[in-house]
Amino acid sequence: TKQGAAIWLSGSKKLSEELFDCVPEGLRDFLELTKKRSKLMGWDTSVMSILDDPDDVAGPAKDYLDHYGSISLEHLQANARIYADTPTRVAQDSMMLFTALHDSLSKIGRDKVTLYSDEYTIDGIEVGILFLKIIVRESHIDTNATTSTIRPTSTRLSVDLGGPESLALKSAPLLSESKMTLAQFTNSASRTRTTSQDQRSRLRTI
Image 1: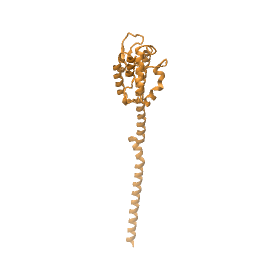
Image 2: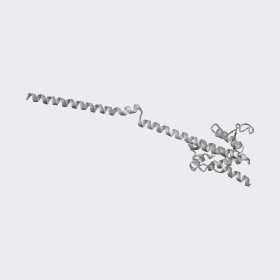
Image 3: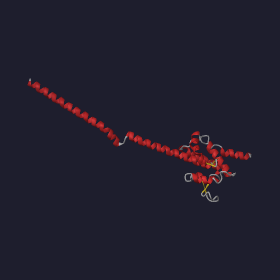
Image 4: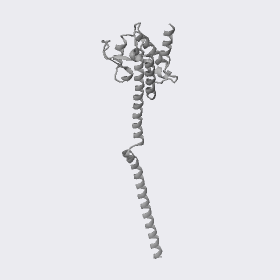
C-alpha cells in the first residue's frame, strides 16, 4: 500500500548524509542516530527488544542499544531465528533496520563488516540487529588494533631512543674517547715541558 511504502522509505533511508567508516571515533554518534531512528519507527518495542530467554517469547526483554556491550552475537542470533523468515512486522522492521544501516556505511565501513555476512544472515536473510552487532564489534576491534599498533611502536621508540641505561651505554664509548684524548693531551703537555727544561739546561751549560 501507499502507507506501507511510506513507512518503508521512512525507516530504511540512511541515518545521515555523513557515512560511517566503522571507526571508534564515530561509533557513539552512529549509535545515537540508530536509537533516534529506532524510537521514530517503534523498533524499541520490536526488533531492538531482545528477549532474555529466546525460548520464552512472553518473558522479559531489554533494549539492545542500552545493553549492546553485554548481549552476545549468539544470543542475538537465537532471538533473530524466531522471526527472520516470517511474514511479521518484526521481520519487516529487521529488514528496514538492515537497509538503513547498510546504506549509512561508507565503502570503507562496508568492507569491514560484509566479510562476516554468514554471521548476520539467517537462511540467506540479512538480519538488522545482527548487522548492527557486527558494526559495533568491528568498530571496537579497530580500536584494539590501533592500540596494539601503538604499543609495539612505543616499545621500538623506547629501544631506539633508549632509557637511562641505553644512554649510559651509548655514552660510555664517548666518555672513554674523551678520557683517552685527555690522557694523550696530558702526556703531550708533559713531554713538551720536559723538552723545554732540557733546552734551558743546555743553554745554561753553554
